[in-house]
Amino acid sequence: MIKRRIGAHQAPRGFTLLEMMLAIGVLALILTMLASSFHTIAQSKVHAEGRLMVDREGRALLWQLSKELTNAVQTQYAISHVALLGTGHMGNGLPIDTITMSTFSAGHRRALIGMTPENIVTYNLTPNPAQQGWYLLQRSQQSGLMPTTAALQSMVLADNVLSLHLRYFDGQNWGESWDSSSMQQGIQLPAAVAIQIKLAAPGGHVMDFATQVTVPMAFSQW
Image 1 (cartoon, rainbow, N blue to C red):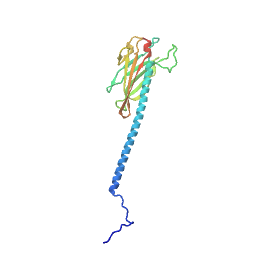
Image 2: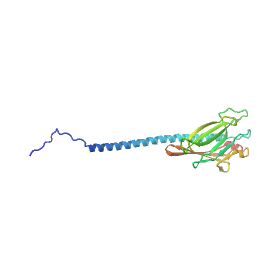
Image 3: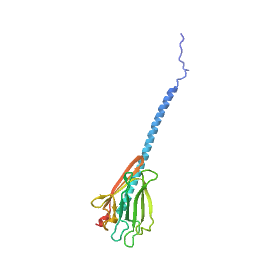
Image 4: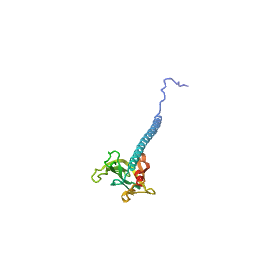
């Protein structure tokens, strides 16, 4: 009987093709999971930064509109061309209101009569041609001294507005519109204005901003 010796020169056993394919498959699965996780984290970071920018934008819009409403004027010493006109509209089932007001601009030098000149300012929404359902918030301004001949200056403040809702408080009730031209001189301004703005944010989110503004000159005329 011949016995086979296990010599030291026997070739080492390698991986089979099946084992290599299984290892490559497992590695590919792990890399796919890692890539998916990294993509999700990166996308979440981008959306979070985008929402932070929209939050700053919404707060800035509220601040600017509130400041000009605070300076809304209808003085008894000189007749204003426009006091405050607020009109309600609807678009895509949401309010897209318009407001026009006369405000005192602190950036101008004082007039001879001791008051700063009035500016006629309008905020309105127009459809955004680049994104269905979004609106452009436009601010237009012209001098109240010569409204018929003064150049109209207009600029877009935001391009992702979904809704602008304005309500007016007359001292007793809230209303959806305001027309000072039909009211008695001296009591033509609302006591307060409620502002609500909805902005589109990354990831399909909707961010809501709201505040109420007291109109000081309304109380000085009561």
